[in-house]
Image 1 (cartoon, helix red, strand yellow):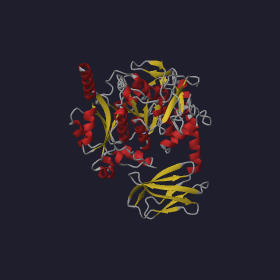
Image 2 (cartoon, helix red, strand yellow):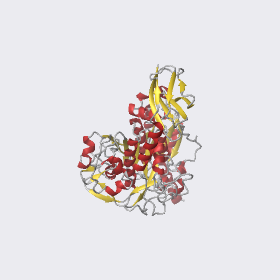
Image 3 (cartoon, rainbow, N blue to C red):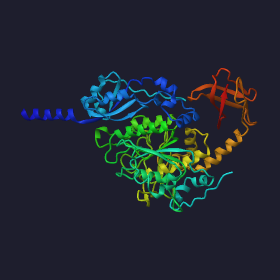
Image 4 (cartoon, helix red, strand yellow):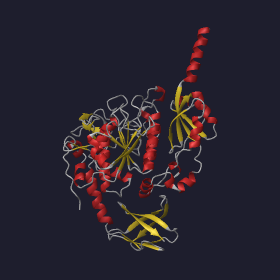
Length: 537
């Protein structure tokens, strides 16, 4: 009996003091409405402009988590606050099961979601994520070792047309960036002022380049931004970059998902155009937190839900599919499973599927994963010693294509993120016969450029808008080949204030009901669109 009592006591002690991870969802954001009405107080002007250009509304999800609530959580017994998410209005905490459950007594706590799902036995309100609906200079690079991986997706022709990613901002989320601030391969990037900033969300420091436990991020960044004269050229050498460390290479814990979402929120507030990540989450050091292949449905994991919100916010998210193709897991990991991101599988130098590249599966209902592929087999990268080396992994096919898309987007700046993703899929080598290995195949990015620009020039070259400024009636002169046009007008918050169809028999709209100020008008045909700004007096 004494032995039995001792065992029971040990179990009780273990359960009482074992550290668990959980997401604490909060009830509200005080003063959210006032902050949304004054967006410059919570977002950069670049972020506001990007949202406006893509007709993305600014909403309560853009408002930061209430710091008073965070302070109160930090003061609770046994609780460590590790991360926060404004999109989910949630805080990632660590503590004992009892101490975390005690947080449910706080008036501002709406629900608790343990990473160990078996602990979610209490009845709690479910989280509802609100969703919005809605003459060229020739650049002749000598690519050296990157020739094959650049030519495979036809980004070299974009570079020749002077589309090298200029004006596109990419946030790279990874595990370590040693050498990026000093090594020669990124000297061109630094000299051009395109290495913008960074942050280490794991160690909570702005010294993001000091962490030397992993060089993975350095290699990933090199495939896009690296430049060694006559030896190596990345796919977007003139794009601008933020680098964020969100992965702790020494462990695997769900808090890394929270770091990633927090970094994505930071990226959104900074106005980035694209996110690239070569990270994926499936299983953890604590097996109680593990996901299963059937969970890879784009709706289960915290990081995939966060990636989907990033896409809603107007960011084009490019994710490596994963390296589980030859394992029992097989399918893509999260966040590559989200239907709202572009997931990149891998091929070798000959364009053939590489066995380690993660595949699509029945878990992705109604959508194809991976989306497309690029070179992942023995891809050329640059390590922290400024040496060109070869490595395997979709960790590299993802950024190779991400940089290529940045160069493409420079060429077709009026395209929305979802349009760009559709164009990339449609240009791919097996668009009509996709499969779970290559998705839609290898894209041809220059084909997208020439096709879209040709279409836009044909349909949109003769549009005129007058008078501007306008008081009452805004006249729209349409090309002869367009007989119907959708007109959408948006205010400076990205909110649609007017939408109507016009025809060749009715070519003006009345704006007298709008308040004075600056507006964006989007003119859309069936296949393309063009955006103007006008002033209402």
